[in-house]
Image (cartoon, rainbow over all chains, first blue to last red; front, top):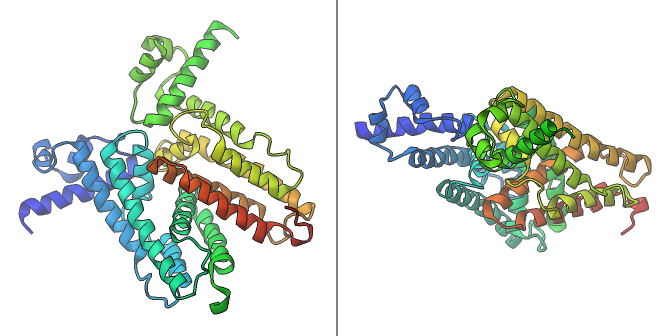
Length: 201
Length: 201
């Protein structure tokens, strides 16, 4: 890695934490300068403006979060157990970038505004949903999951329920809502999604 | 209402829309001046600073949102149907203040920062959850809801799942995730929460 590239990555990593914690509108290039110890010119050499840095910071934070969430989810043999592994990851993995879920934070900040960031968040959501939908499709083919289950819809419901529970947990500063969401989603998966013929506990 | 009080309310209503759409950090007192046509002094006569205005604006937006969400929920005789009415309200009622759910927006903006706003959002969440938990408790007493159901936990799950689905809808600019969430939550309520002895459809 060249020195320039290393500096660029250091800026992105610092900006990711700052933006994800305080919101993009809530901080300035000045804050990134302070965090990195770089002059303004040292940052603008790599990014045309704050928006461009915000996009790179989101991509960085999302990649890190997504990696943690899907870690090892193909290890369990049964697809319902793979979905549960994903839920466990979401709840138990310490967040890679401070400040909560970068997807939710960026979605809330960009839904009425910044089209560039909104496009990245939309793409991130699609990647996440598709990853889970693929597991559900495989599960249906292997008759582990009932034929009536719609992969994309169940994936969306899992993502939405966990993100909403995370919002509550971050507001209340405890882990309750997420742990409760896990109980509801697990019992839903076992009762309504798991194919009764192949039910293994 | 005195002229001063009317002016105060006009400032709060305008600020609520601006803050809920663009985020509190994303706009300034200047924006509120432009929206209300008032001079800076005319705003600071009523609010000591932007934070104080932001709290009043949140309270205003939340009151309006909460009112819509609980409108008529005590009309259905059965408590499961009351919960479904609440879900319908959440999905079908046009938002009273533009920019999405004020609770979610404020939660995301204040979870790492502004303690005053965070306290208001936490209180709003508790009010909402308690309203739903009360319905669930009544349902348990009337044997419409299974004894095993935990009122506060189910209320939290309903709130979280709908808020997460709303986040997805606002990002994708369609109503799909909310409508899908309704299907999952309804089937959950009917299958796992509704007491089998008194099941009425």
